[in-house]
Length: 94
Image (cartoon, rainbow, N blue to C red):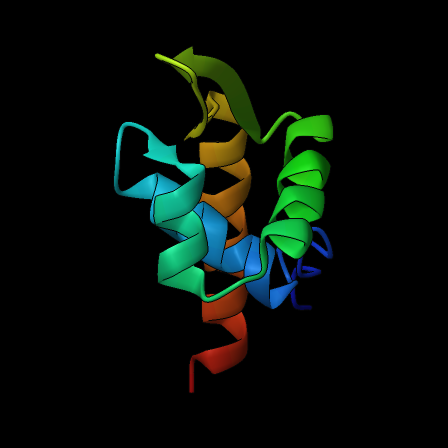
């Protein structure tokens, strides 16, 4: 029996965000937007969903007068991402 794929992580953009955050200590909004090619509005909505689930933490601050939003993955997010990858491996193993 195959593990169920986590529907929160199965979204293309949310999976891309989590993949980025697994490899860095933190990433700012503009970097994630540029790497994923997402619109600011869509990315903001997806970050809110990941944050509400406890998978990432979003920090908003000012750098001088410019707002700066950055994200980092939480231990729960790391665990859920690893579980998602393990489940995915079951589907592609031959």
